[in-house]
Image (cartoon, rainbow, N blue to C red):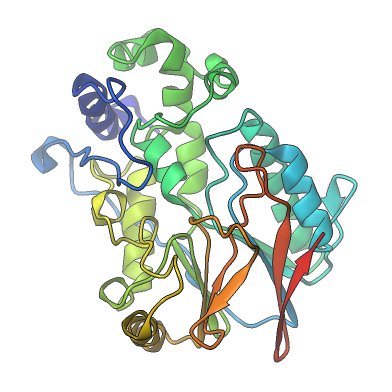
Length: 327
């Protein structure tokens, strides 16, 4: 991608650093600040279409937040019967990883490489791997590094290369420049994330990182395209998904046991998106994978990464049965 097309998206991230984002880390529940440069500073972007809907499979498995822990990732994928050794063993299974591969752990490159390899191997075997974008993927693309570990900066040191890129990253702290070059919108990993949806509908199940409210459920294809266009470097703003508290990557509306109003809101969102159940990550369920609203909602973030100390668990959907696989 031409350097000029990468400058405008990154201006937004520089604004975040200039505002003193590292002075005091805000609550982990807070969305990233609006990192938006002037719309007039960049040409109108081409929209990047991203697949949103998949046909049902005989077997679908879902794994929640991984947060930089490769050993826990391998354990979860082995439990899901899609990993043997370092290779895909799931045949025609469809695997959904609901986002938040990044932050809180030091082994992000290993997880990204493993998922990339498994995606190709799954497709060759007749299966599928769908990786969603979570809030932490979008935060990194916006230059919000408040949950990056020291090792998480060191792992990407080699990505800041060349005079033009050095000028572009001049306002970023030196120790963070490699990660910024790798993840900011238009960067190497951001362009890979641009191929991932925020909302994925597989048969009659919708998968989303935080939670899908009815206000966001009317046009999931357009929402996915908006985020992916930004990640690929085609626009200067991450849009509403990055900055609004109730967006699909940030919402915790269904995190605690939803009351009658919460289940009614879930029903509205499911009707709009054309699904009968929703699977979400984002909020750690300390007691394990937890259903709610007559099993129309499944919360699968079990805090399996070392940062949380949980144990892997996987949700399996096959024919008319939904069950939890745990160690």
